[in-house]
Image 1 (cartoon, one colour):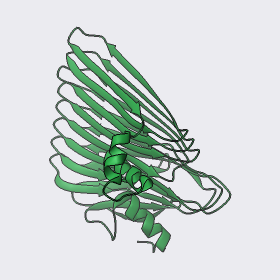
Image 2 (cartoon, rainbow, N blue to C red):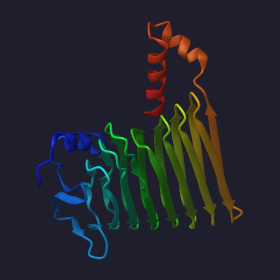
Image 3 (cartoon, rainbow, N blue to C red):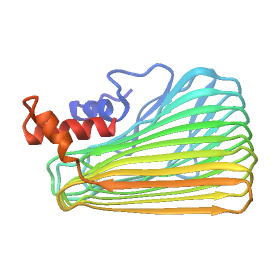
Image 4 (cartoon, rainbow, N blue to C red):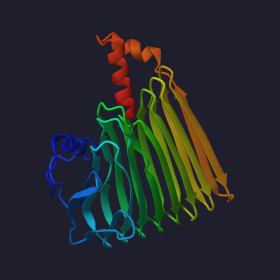
Length: 308
């Protein structure tokens, strides 16, 4: 494994909670190069030959194993596009930890576009954690544009946690999913923007089979003059259940746009969208301030609890 400096190690802790080399399969990418890679008996990681990226194959029946594929960038002006394909075999049950951290201390924009495609086999279950983080005092932006595609076979389960709570100047997240009968998709998105940051998040989920279901929930905070857009579209093509929810706190001169899109193409498609955008309630602030907190400290406590 390539030796990482202290900034790169800090980024790994932020995006993947890694304090050392992870157990199990992993690939650590640093400034567009592999800093270390390991496969296991049941999880094979191989570089792609057609484009920059990886092919990760998880054998059928694999249980209690994990894959870590974090990315760290500390070189100003670096821009990359990475394609990672995951093949999760039938009846497997695994955790995949991704995420990208950018520390930009220079004048040029740094950008990572990660395209992840998941092919989830019949009866398989995958938990996917993706964290984005930015730091550095340079004038160059920290830009992250993730694309996630999920193709789910019968009775499979995908649980996805998408987190971005600090330092990313611009992000355009696109998620597409197609579910067959009995498949279940759960997404929990947590997002905070500040300064002049911009965050776009779009979902297109197609429920094709009987009993397919999707539950997509976004919690976000927009501070200063930042802008957020949450665009969630669910297509119900059979007897299915779909739910999207946007729950947001707006502060200062922030702006938030929630766009629901529900399309029922079957009489037994049950689709629901909920949205709530508002400021922090005054009674919440007062209650915490009576305990000795300043107004700013009370706000931070409320926001931290909201985004957990």
